[in-house]
Amino acid sequence: MTGKVDEALSYEQARDELIEVVRRLEAGGTTLEESLALWERGEELAKVCRRWLEGARARLDAALAEEDEGAQGAGGGGE
Image (cartoon, rainbow, N blue to C red; front, side, top):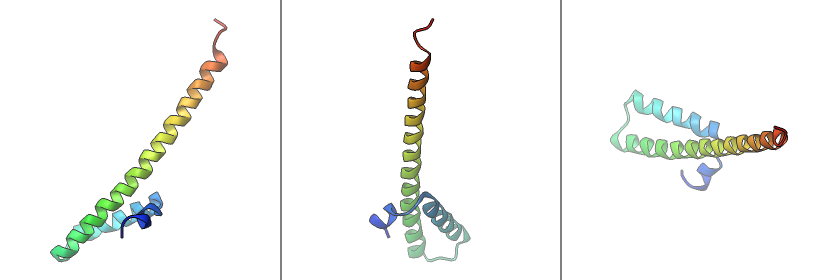
């Protein structure tokens, strides 16, 4: 389950599934093959979360830059 399906996951969906994957790995009792599949799924989910967080950071940075530009333009020239 990778690719376009992962791209459709919200941050919260990916995070919740990642938490479940980690819980299952920590609980043990899975075969080596199952553990490897869980690990790989966890890596994919972590990438989805990372992309969401990087996108959020970029949006925040852009909003802060606009705010700074607006503040400089509104108060400049009168000193």
